[in-house]
Length: 378
Image 1 (cartoon, rainbow, N blue to C red):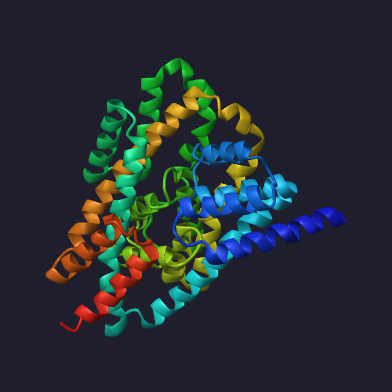
Image 2: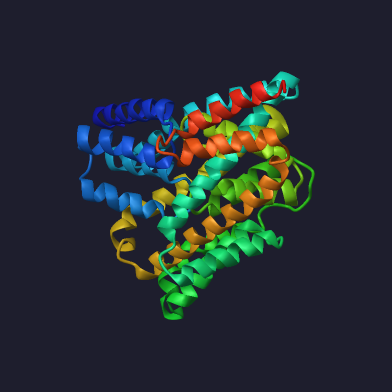
């Protein structure tokens, strides 16, 4: 490795570690921060190419903003830059979330901590509902897509696994687009389909099963990071029984509260299930597919940008993801909104999120925790 490459890798690591520490506000905010640093300040690429890469991340599974860090790293430092940028961005969130996981396992069942978590859960539901509305307004391009989204939501409410529902929406979207375009998009489907059977159905937790479960989720996670709630509910709560829904909401809240990708929730869940090594294998499993897909996709971006079939598949998958998120909000709401305290917290959270102030999701969660603490004495 020559001096120029080493210097660039240090530059990449420094930038994305900084972004990983301060990347609050969700994927859109993360990408805006990257655009300022990578395009405007450092001029590693043109504005148009940056936009092409943003669009390309929507064609593959995984967290968009994290995959954008990998694309940016690849542009500056090749394959080594891809891995350096991705790991540097993920690391702060993983370490912080791991710390919270330790505190949760040690103290989460104490009454005073329980009051904080009680208030956080309604706040998280409002944040997910906000994402459903925003993504739905963007993804609902025509009546056909609306029907696909509704069918995906109905399928989940009837007990169909979320992964099958979202891929089903994608396949139907391709069928509506025209079967003769299927071949040009087939590359997007085989690996996730193969991974459907990668996770044993047995309920006993082991490091291998935990790794394969999160590897499968990471390989099929289309749409917003909030879709993770639906996938985790289907796999870990309903299918494997490794978590309760209450514990799942706690994990999502911690992932939302910390900077960086919300997929750091995997670290929390892995620690909750199998301790330190559980956190390691769950984190590795959910993020590894993103590194692989970005490494494959980066050279193909110019051609994918012009593919109508890839666009049709993406549109259908995105609206299917929104439908699934809406279904999960209904399911989780039935378990969280049980008394007047939860409704007060949710109402104030909705006012903060949908009102004229547009309060950051971080502060909505902090507010929910404070209200949960205060109302817990009532």
